[in-house]
Image 1: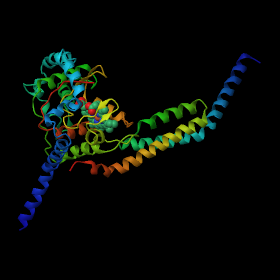
Image 2 (image 1 turned 90 degrees about the vertical axis):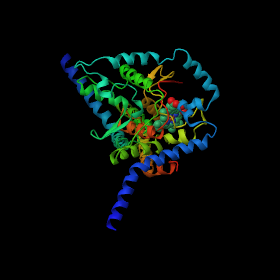
Image 3 (image 1 turned 45 degrees about the vertical axis):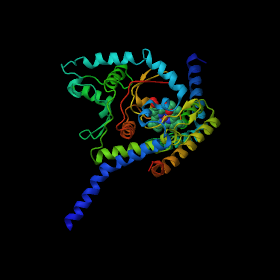
Image 4 (image 1 turned 90 degrees about the horizontal axis):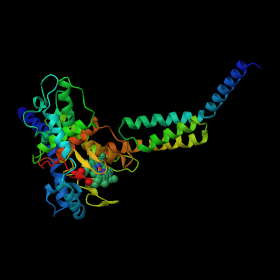
Length: 102
Length: 273
């Protein structure tokens, strides 16, 4: 085997295992995207929560490291907090009025 | 008859411009009068120190020596007096006296937005071909510290001149009373409902007088900093994503909050923990 061939083989192995890893986390990556969209929507309304962004960052790092299960856990946390923030934003569209001193 | 109806309509419309904020302010002030019957309204410009005897003593000691904002005021004066490259200077934008803080934030009908003192400083620079200052820049803080110092004693005089201004005021008002963040607090939760109570080691100050003393030296920051930086911190501590310094949200918030303190004397810069 020529060194060149060994190099090529190693390279293709890396590419294959890379795509396998990505495939492995595809479920998590989809959930991360869903959470990201939910976060952007609530951020646009001015009601984003700090922890959502932290969970998203962690989920992405987990996914990149091939820790797919942990990525799912953090993506789910991101989605849950983004949804709760949206409930808050919707309530607060009117609920604030009751707090104004009369 | 037709005229009477038109006239009546017209009066209610113009009343809604004027009466809204003024009614809000009266109720706001009364809230604190009732809450703290033994504290003179003007005392609230001293924040938590109006409500906490021990903390007040420590604070007075700090203020009586060489207060840590002195350099900023001094440097700000030098910057204020400098000429721009085109020969003009800040006095061409603001008038001969730098004692103008009581009018800010103001509604700029032409730009269609709330203009804070810091934004006005940058607008002045822009119209004279100077580069804009970052809102965390020491020069910006120093300039606004100098204007604040020169404006000491002036009563806050915020105006809401028309419907567009009223819309911005209403945005700021809603922001103040809306719960935000994972901890689900509104500004009003801490600075109205719980004002005077202790939160961990801190005494919660009244919202009245919150805008009178900026920029302020805070020992926690170890520097003089702007009001919007405090807004960011208060958002952050309830785990709400903060907005940027001079964002539209914070400018509208400052507009509302300043209107609530109309008539109170300016006393910036000062020191806070």
